[in-house]
Length: 321
Image 1 (cartoon, helix red, strand yellow):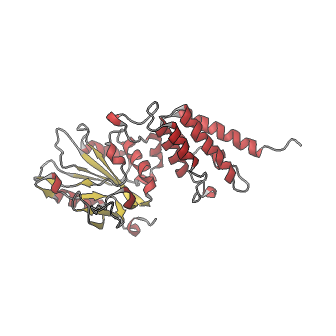
Image 2 (image 1 turned 60 degrees about the horizontal axis):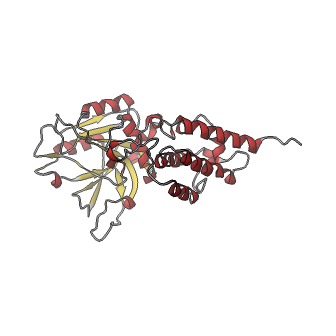
Image 3 (image 1 turned 45 degrees about the horizontal axis):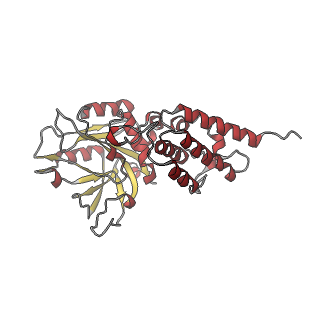
């Protein structure tokens, strides 16, 4: 993926005129330039406001209605945009959290915002365009940084958002955070990442399975380990980490989920590269994604590391002859 606007400090933002999203426009903008657009846009009704998304979209419509805003049409991500509607945390408080973490961002109030019941969007550009598969990880980082308060729709890949005020709302504003790094560079945030909440506002975690174990096992059976595009020589961790987090989330951190993922990880030795243990054999290395792969589940983490090291030792142990 190319760096953001060849180092100009601008990112590609896609705009849709309305909810139907039959047409799109793409502009390269700085965060300050976007803040100006957001603050100056107004309409008499919410549904008359335009939408934005930190992503590039293709030209394939979802159906006969011609909507371009759907998951399958997302080409790349230029940033993460997330929604807060909890009506407790102010946009200034959100901006302060981002500022303390040194993350480049813009926080703008949503059309239904008022200062007594705050609602806002947090938008964090990336240092370079990322593939769609990184969306969940990036939003989880942002959600953890903000205290796990983001709305569940924030995790929808193609979700775009209204911007601007309704009727010239005087409480409408946009806050630019000039950070020191981009969200995708802040690997330390994986340690506090919080995934999508379940129904009723519950955060995903132990004892909250989201899929039958049979479906999880079936999915893992068709996912190769390693995937063809993994670069084992470079120590590719992100994809393994994402699959690990997905299984933990789907299984609710259960024993059955652990066993299914551990078996899938162990199968990596079949694609061992010359002179080194299989993919699961290096998970005991002190690498941030391993410490964060399963959220706050140290039990899974420690057991995966123990099992991986044991298998690696068995494969490289000298012969007794």
